[in-house]
Image 1 (cartoon, helix red, strand yellow):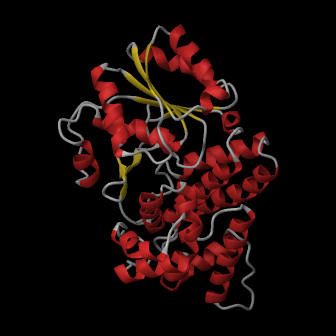
Image 2: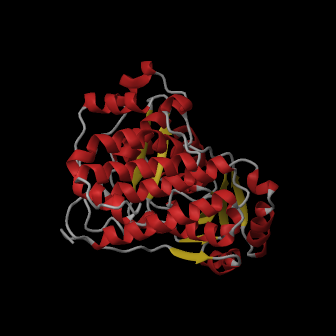
Length: 388
């Protein structure tokens, strides 16, 4: 393990089929005024909305609704949520939904009492928070982002063609999150597999960095093997509780900062995917899937030993009698076959990207420096072109 680091995670998790009951334990810790944050109509159709409202009323809470959070929350929606929170002096933000809803809630938590434009201050300039922060609680209905146990918050500005992920500190982490795998059963297959790939990508972004004998890499390999196994079961039977519960738990541990310890981390697949999302508003996990193969083939020569290890330890590639490069490439080939088995989007053209967009996409891509190769502008354009 190289470097020096600290680790803490203040989020309390309640996991399992009866986990919603623990909302009754958490609500008394906060004031009377609750901003109930959710997406469109799915939680009303499946009855979860009524259950949560009943619990809130039972605990004497006054509810201020903040509905309509979109899959890629926009800066305009952020301003709207901040106004609700500030005008009603809310005491708790309760996010009910997937990662976008949780991300948005954390953005509101940091921004509602900001005296400046929060987009400028916290996303463009990435400044520290110097205002009151509202507490957040999450009830998860979709897995993938890991937003239920971290400080990440991704906001999209369509006008500026930017999609920026800000990682806030411990003070913005959800105070509690409720994880009931059954709540994810009604998710359409497209969204389920997109979430599964988001989980895989989170792990790989941290795994493909560094060359030391790092405990984090062993943890990552175990999480990846479990994810691959459970994903195949869930694709065939979406209501298999064991598979869906494993996937939910892996998603949380993939991005609660644990497996990043001792790692420089990469995150270029996410930067490429975010650029695509800012132009197309496509589902996040699918934007990652569409650019991954081209990117990994580009950086493989610079991180050859880790790609070889990945092939052997995660995908069970037999190394006997093969060169390191052949082993590494076979690992990516087996991964690509699994991606197609999962029905993931493999080409950017299927998400609405055209060749005319490539320069603009490259201009909207933030370059990270923790991976095996720092990409030039021309190389970023080439990765997007190879992903078409």
